[in-house]
Image 1 (cartoon, helix red, strand yellow):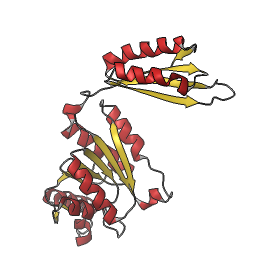
Image 2: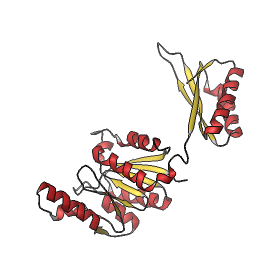
Image 3: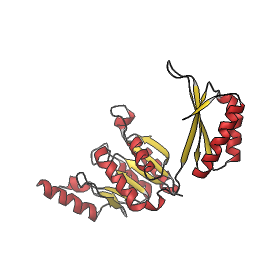
Image 4: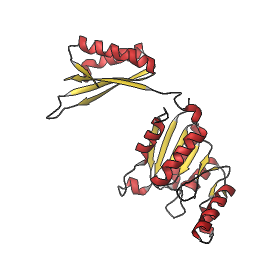
Length: 252
């Protein structure tokens, strides 16, 4: 079963000049296909840290979506970092060159060395088509490098998922069920949660406490997530356990 992760790159995000939108969208795109992110990392435009991170994630075997930093301005380091992490040179990809030349022809613009540099990627990469302006991203093994612009990155991520990972869709689909335990205390329910995980090892028990508000009483959202057939059994155990502790509850 593949593990999916994300790297979101950009000083503008780390310094608060822009708010990241990629994480929520990747969660949505994966979730629609029965998949989920296992991890995410935010990084600034620092080439040594990018190299260190990509070297580690390339060796992990994870499927990784990297958003940002694949341009050619001085603060874009992702292409160079990916090549260094993989231990391969940068090279002009012929498929990328074809797309760039076609885009420049559409715009009646000259093909300059700077524009072709957009197609200079780690040797051995495949391109990711960009339906917005034809300037491609690239894939190196199971790492997929996308622009920082959402209108480009999101359809490109969908293309990657549907082209390379359709076999994973719904393979590890999860179910989730939860109850709202009114005036519940996590400490009081701790043993119930631990025992439920022990009895049903293919589910995860979670709890989300809320201090309440003027309109909603204090409560704990108590639930289970995991294999659909097991979730149905485990939530009944939690309901019975909560009632035995003297709490009232409603379905989430």
